Length: 457
View (cartoon, rainbow, N blue to C red):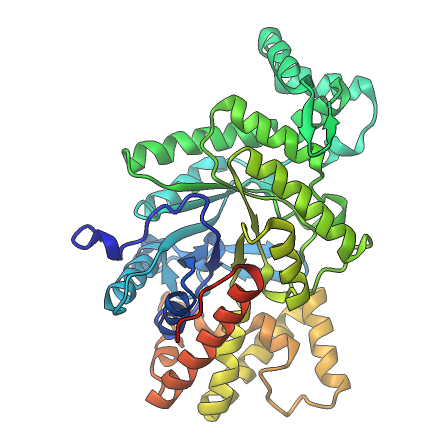
């Protein structure tokens, strides 16, 4: 990384790019990097989240994986990709050095979650330590937002939010003065009243305090080295519905202004667009209003020198991806991940059918366990296979396989050793040739829907 800086990941600022979550590292990187070069676009080609990576100490000590709970998906063990922050970074840089051309790429420590409870930001700091050489940090505060604050319309409650979150009267007055100023929104003007400000303070104040502390920690760790910093509010806890928390223009205006008031160097912001995992956009407002809303949010962010980031873009149709392109004029950061693992499954099914049967059966076993625990999506996806009469017909197209096939890769035994990981990196040369071509085609397609890549063949 320091010997050949031009071949290393770096902060890219407001350059449009893909964020490419990699669950199969060296299996998929050659095709990804070929697409980046041929399409002449940038990407965070080293990317994965806290949920999918191990801390190195966890593997060295054989400590059991922690378990997170994802809405509709049930319990998910941390580190299910079989990688660590350090390992993913090292292998990704080696692949970039090995690639014959220079690429514009970054390394994203994605979804560094700030959780509720006693651990708070201290556990987040451990992940930041593990990702000290990364160039992009996505701070996810979705779990500590006060969602209930935006459902109250009582002026008394709004004042109580202000007083409890900002007990210092002088600071409270400054905050109110700052956010009451009239703001331009295209041809319109928007002016927040005290009630709105109180509700937004209630939702975001403690989360922004946490961001401020983590920014200071990262900045000290990086010691003058440039990095990109993203604030993510796109997800929601299990008890909160996605479409009840869509980020409004007024909400985003408050947020970006408060970021500016605090002097936080946020370069990227991932609002709740209403994008969900596993489905195309299905908001009641329809695609026309959705495009208008994305355009408004883009204008607000860009006027504050921030770039919008769309997470969970895997399952959006080409039509919806092109909507993002029009609404942002191609100035968008767009993250994908699970769909690339599905692509790996399709190629394994085609070229390595015996191994695919093993992978499919193991995924079926895991999905049945989740269904017995009452996980809704596991039950639904199994029912689809039963109703189609395909319980004995392995296919990479089965929904349960697409959504739960991650479990096999990172499975560990009672001693903490990986059970299947090596099997996923022992495929034939025919597989690698097919995988490279399929991955390149998919990445170029997604980039073409979002940006204006210059295809050079």
